Amino acid sequence: MRRYVVQHRHARLAMCYHFAADTTFAIAVRRPPTKTSTCPRMQLSPRHPTRFERLQCSVRRELACGLAGLLRVGGRAQAQRWLDRALRTHRDISPCFFAPLPVSRIALGALPTRACRVSIIDTIIAEWVDCDGHLFNCLDYFLGTGNWAPLIRSTNGDPVREEARQLLEADLSYKQTEVYQTLVQAVRDNPPQRRQGRQLTEVADVDRYFERFVRLFDSIMQHGMLEHAVLDRKALRFSRERGMGVAVDRNGSLHRLQGANHRWAIAQVLEIREVPVEIRLVHVGNGMALEDRLENVLA
Image (cartoon, rainbow, N blue to C red; front, side, top):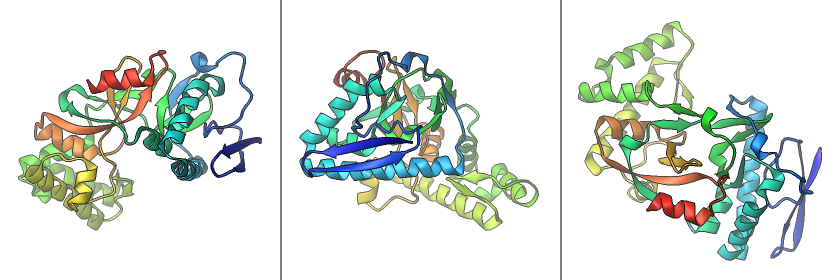
């Protein structure tokens, strides 16, 4: 076990946490710098987490929210200084993902958004990443380093996109689609399928899943593809599915983040040209300043 001390100047308190050795949580931790960075040797690969690893990530997420609350007391300038420090020291602590998202939101005021052409994003980045034996959920962080190539896969053959295509062809009468019959048959004969984080263990679960899908279809056809903040104001959200987020890799290319799969699929089958996306993960390993990278992406 290692001891990490988090200090906050405004609250004048020090919180001591004991994490397992795999905790590279980077919440302004005081850790002796290494003489040489291990970032170039990091091996990244997608991996499914165990239940205990999911719990660990949940604890880190709660701690990040707590730190964000402390930094909010000190104002945005304090959060900006924290983010600057994380950028300066990330080569010493050598995580593949750092700068928790809640703190980064405060430091930036809001995460950058842009209108993005649906046709240029046909890849998705893995949610759970093994980094030399340390497990990260990349959705919890704003900045990253390392070689992301093993984490990126094509979205061709996405079952949700096929479901959206068949729904549109059936005029949203989901019980007439082949994918509905397939999921119902899977409930009876095979291990249950998962959709939106839920197991479809009964026919009623399959019906509820498609009913939510159809309501989302109706909403997008009526109102267009709106940002999540607008959906909340207009009370148009039908599920807890995340908004549409993207990651910016070392070369400036955009990749989908996990979440909002149904919104992406509907946008593709309806041939919507542009959708609003939130930039939630940025690669900073090529030496370019964060401001310059964001400016290039938002241009």
